Image (cartoon, rainbow, N blue to C red; front, side, top):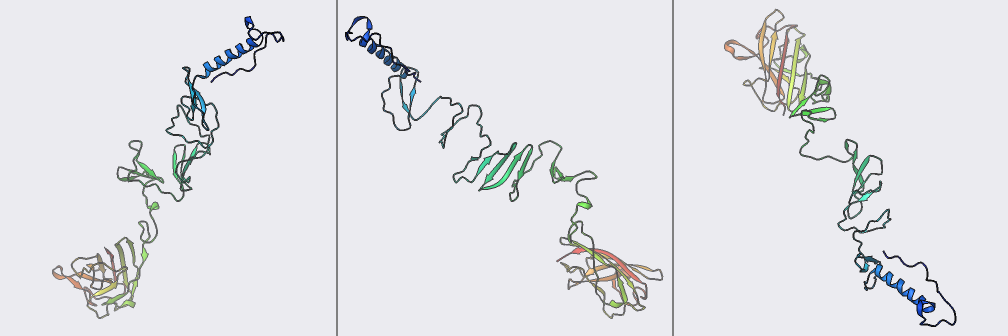
Length: 328
């Protein structure tokens, strides 16, 4: 920019007898000449632009003898300026842009922003709520936020991906003796993979006399699969005096299909207190809430149990079995 004079030249002779056009540049003539020289020098430094300044414009020199008024500054370095509510168009930071921890608002309604007012931490606010946070080596989705992605890939080969101490590698859940999926990690609620078997007390009917048996039975249902075990011990001399056509019991869970005698849902052993042992199978019946037990009789035919078959039933005779079927 131009350097303006800071003082007026000193009049060389202020004598009242001075002649206006006196030679040698003294008196009033000399004063005017020096003013003229300063004005010429100032004009050289400012340039020769003649446009009229508008509001908020500044005088800008080109460095080649011209200047003019402009609202645009190009190629100018501002050192430690304070700029209030500017509008920047296609701004380019030559080296760095220091926000000094203040919030940078990035949407039109001013409720989405990025800020780093806490040292070594970046917070992302969306719709006026803090949703995500970056700290050293950690990206955090804050409460109420979700990370939605189609793929999570390992960053280091052979390491896999760890989610809350559970390692997943190449489609498999892996772990050592103290990690991965273990019995202690399985859900123990009813229906969970780690759930305990539940007590089940079936009602006996058909050939059974329900009151003449002790029952030690349990089951486990996982999804639509039911596992069960049955143990019956006779407490009377005539435990098979029910008068029905089959030895039937209520299932712990309603079955999805009726297997009749073609597809057994389990196997059983009939124990005679005298020492005889017979193989048997368990089936579902048409009602889907009942199971029945038949033993392997002559010619490998599944035969109904009666008070005399496959032996004469009496006290301490017992039936034990295990099975599995599809729940309704």
